Length: 374
Ligand SMILES: Cc1ncc(COP(=O)(O)O)c(C=O)c1O
Image 1 (spheres, rainbow, N blue to C red):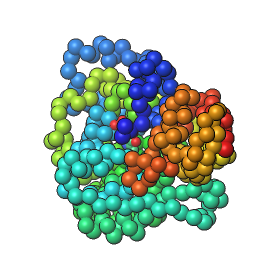
Image 2 (cartoon, protein in one colour):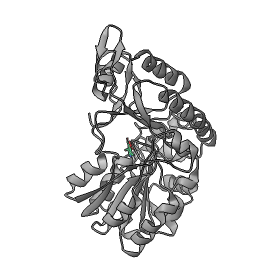
Image 3 (cartoon, rainbow, N blue to C red):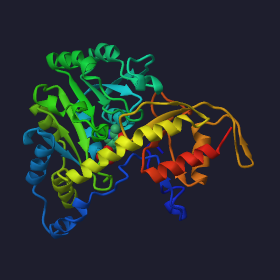
Image 4 (cartoon, rainbow, N blue to C red):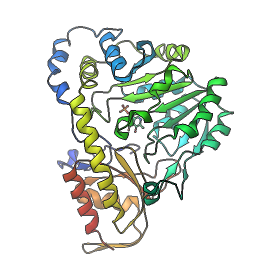
């Protein structure tokens, strides 16, 4: 499995319900504003969607404060990622990161450079010292950009959840703007940071080099609706992407979702309150698990952890040298799916990623992990 979210193989297909810690979806679930208006979707099934998606664009404009002509709509963020990468011959990928960047680049025959995140120690911020930190290597990105047409990076980055430091990034932004390079920033998880200042959507107006990717998938808990969007003031790039798309790629239910959930301020506020409370609590409890060596500071709704490889006893079985593979199997037996992180470039079998969910599920997971003592 190259992605999280496989609740089927060891779960539903065997008649078992597993608690999914491998995909990072807001536990507040589908917004009521979508459910209350779902009939609009049913009533419009017999006609084609507006091929210009004017209602959706109006909603996006209000949500992001960006002009309607800056948007390109996709069947999930995945379609936008694929098509924006397809527009380039060479790409710098900041890794470890969402595996589709590399898969798409290879599919389109793009030549690839990599810039690895680096572990940061002794930060000025005490919270940052409490947890491990993987940060962008801004200098390395700037150097390697000279060899490529575009760079792609996550903000927050999956799987570790760090965010771009805007001060450090300014040099990269100016360089790309003056040298016709494209910066693709995947903001699929941006709302979980709780602060819109962390987004680059606002800078799209000033910088044509920016291309931002977002979706309803994670924060609005709708991976099944398949709705994502790109934002850029680079008319040529937006036109190029649109030229590669099929007409009516957004179905009528996704259209209804986009028109309603983006203005559901009650859902948005409640979700931000949940992550504000649950993230520090969950991180702290993971730190106390004996076989977790490092918990990485995150601004998203997921946490990267490094296992320390120590032996621990589980029931009668004595597992020597725990790694993600062994832990995955134990968790499945206990009713949980976790994300093995070894297929992220730069990580190995010592790493796992866990979603942050509702209080009760988090407590169950932590209690289960605690029960697997050394
Ligand atoms: C960083 C990142 N971007 C994009 C996506 C894909 O999102 P979507 O389901 O909207 O295509 C994912 C899914 O896991 C992701 O982790």
